[in-house]
Structure formats: structure tokens, C-alpha cells
Length: 139
Image 1 (cartoon, helix red, strand yellow):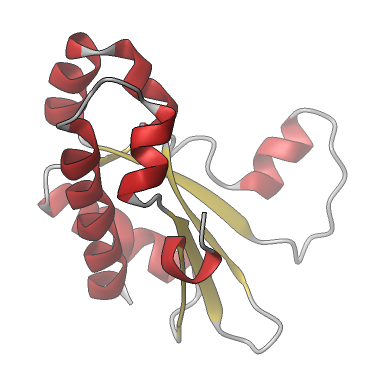
Image 2: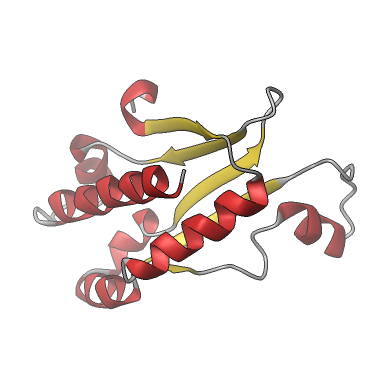
């Protein structure tokens, strides 16, 4: 994996809460869903399970999914599931900007992880590109 190619690093002038709301709306407009809206605020999730984090801790782990694509893909080959959770990390930066991170994989990485499935790398790569474009739209 090549960090510079696979890790999308960007920032927004919006607050974490505003970016999260705007990104969720963009996701919905593109027939994707945020699969974990109830648990993506990690401060709340950690505290609900006995974790201790400071009040200023503000990290949202947004799981993005397109159920109408994932259903067919995973039915065809459950081995693909390893690459299905697509998380967009949104957190408060030290510079006052909201930081956004998204990790994707190269065609070679995908082919190495899901063997004997020649069409999958191209298909999932299109999804990676779409998620990056939705992040940019929400910024």
C-alpha cells in the first residue's frame, strides 16, 4: 500500500457537525447510506461502553455503503466483504479546521486481497473514487 495514493487527506472550514450533516446529505443524494449514524460519534460510543474521553474529543467514523450495489457484490462473492466497510474519518484538527481522512486501496492491493475475482478491483475502485468526490462536494 502506498500512503500517498491510498490515503485521502483533506480539510474543511466547516465544523465537524456541519460537515457530517452535509456529507450524509450528499451520500443520500447519491444512493449511498451512512450505515452507522447512531454510533459514528466515537465520543458517545466510547462513553456508552465505559471508555473515558475528554469533552473536546470529536471523532466521527462514518461507514458509507451503497446497499443496492453491495447486495449483488457480496451475493456473488462473500470474500469481497473484507473491502466493503468504507469509513470516512472526520475529526477536529489542531488548526481549527475539520480534518477528513479516507483510506482506499489500489487495484493491485484489491486483487491481492480478493483472489480469483478479476472484475472486482475495477468495480470497487470506482466506488473509492465516488466517495472521494462526495467528500469534496460536502466540504
